[in-house]
Image 1: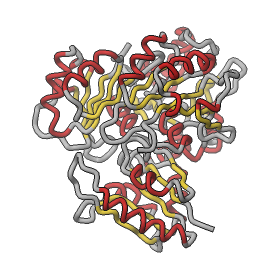
Image 2: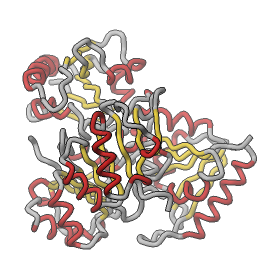
Image 3: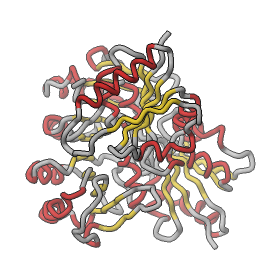
Length: 230
Length: 230
């Protein structure tokens, strides 16, 4: 007998946007792991906090916050630590902001463990649909195409994809906001673009792009370009 | 005082993939509406059934099942019926499979009502992330681009978008499966493609595209092309 590795999507931020299934699995998981900053703060853990049993073994995976670089040795070590529990027949639930397979760091553990151990992914509400709900504008309908783009792509790659599709989401806006504004304006899409930060959280902010100044945006902010109101 | 219109994402099929928030709102909603087939069957209602209070007023919106045509008069009438409840200060919760703003028919009610009445959207787990979870393969990571495509697009439009992006989801596969297979093969992407039907339901089926024959696929099936295993 071995334990099972669970990748648990805990949704975009509001604890009520966790699924019933995520809550059930957490409430009985003997070991709960989550990504954490150097100082130990974990956004994923904060979302799920009220559902974590007091007797659970907790494992903070401290990931240095340097965008663009994947700390291989951190995930190697975390995978070894998790495997110890799995080998001793303890399930391990890994908390994942949003959805585990939608730009989530859970993949790095999945890469290392899913070939050897039983693994299940519990999908969650992604930032994509949470941000769309926040804008109060339908994102895609009927035969629309939707492109999802990280803000780090080169200008020309962003522009060609924005022009080729009906709707778009640009992730990890952060310091790229002024550059993205220029591209979106050149594509004639500004009037259809919303800026969203901290979707579903107490500090959620949604504005039309034209009403957003160029002051710094948080890393997890998003631009959504929707088809409009039909 | 007026009621509020709620668009409630009930997720992809497993009732446990409903959010805590969706369950809470449904359990106290005086009026619950949902799309239904001509014969009255409603997939959205089946997902949420255990959370619908016996005393709720239920409203089945009977939508003729003819893909490609939006029955304007059905949504006009449903919007009028819903408005009667809102005017009398009763909240109306509309059940939406998956997520309300991700290719959902809730948009047709939103178009007609959100300009006049208070409206909130509760995001749900979309078919996109539910299907990715079912494949047990990460969909997008780091700086990947993702394209979401309805199967109804012309061949050349599908091919150019598949070739331009790292990952793809093709929705509403249904009768298009043989044609899609030819396009994906020509793009050299067959080995990275999974076929999924009824994700998260008891009759879920996941296979690699190369292991799926060309027998008829249900309308709500999906092809997922992921980046592979790193």
